[in-house]
Length: 257
Image (cartoon, rainbow, N blue to C red; front, side, top):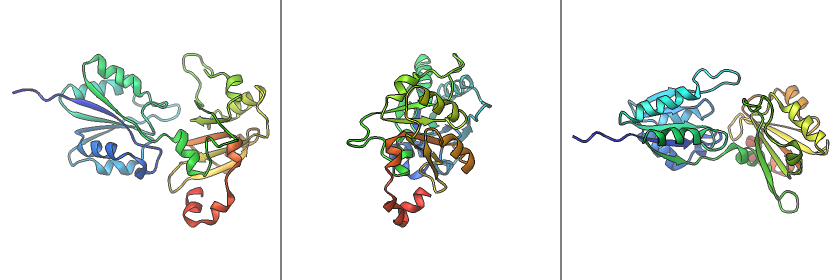
């Protein structure tokens, strides 16, 4: 008897709304023997798992990773080498600040077949869900996506504030805690203090909220309004382009919050 070969699928669950998960991702989820999932996924999608599928929560919380990345890697190898079809379900897209490539490398090192299923990243969809384009003709022809967390190896931000300040649109992920420090760095690097900014909480979900301000005020606005994680912050002229007429459309008003 030939032993069944295990396989790992790194699946992007999308930005929050379960309907924004890809059809391929949903199909693989319904076929998986084992689902190893993050915290920032739409939990409703776990209902699509087949009966008997093992679901393992390895979600990481700010300042508290109860399951280390090394332990997650071990879980992938453990289940796949025993012949299971494993779905590693990650929020957004696996390769956008998701450590997906590290997990792909681990699978390769152990001779495990590993496939990538891209997901809709909040780096773009959050802005769209708030009616904000990350690019717009005559306004923004470039955008940068950066993490708001410091580099653990350096103890500081690894991005170049001077280069970032020259971008038309800046998308900050996981930046709520360090937003004041980041915006101050951008202003010091030459970004106009009145540059529009918006912070989007629970993007694409029914409980989405959006806070507006400028690069010099957005961190205070976020605190005053009580915007909480997960949050995506958009900085640039595009953040001031929201067509207020859209708010008169009930379907759009419900999304904009």
